[in-house]
Image (cartoon, rainbow, N blue to C red):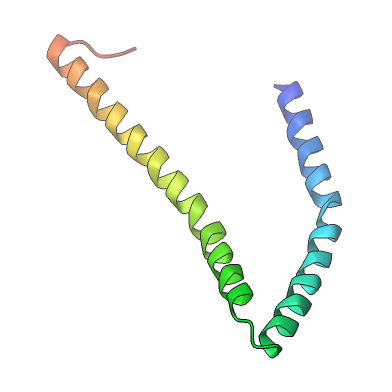
Length: 89
């Protein structure tokens, strides 16, 4: 258990140390979008918006799929228990 906690703490520290470069990219994207839109090119801005929506919905889709498979497995196990007349445990 201690080994897992050390890994979690180390991962958290590494994530926190890497955030400064993430914030730097935000200003660069904004500058690129402003210059492309002012030049009349809206395809880059539309593609950026599509990418943002993809990143927004991806975790929800993954969690939904996980919940579906968990539900299906629990229903299957409940039918097995009901058919055999045993309780697990």
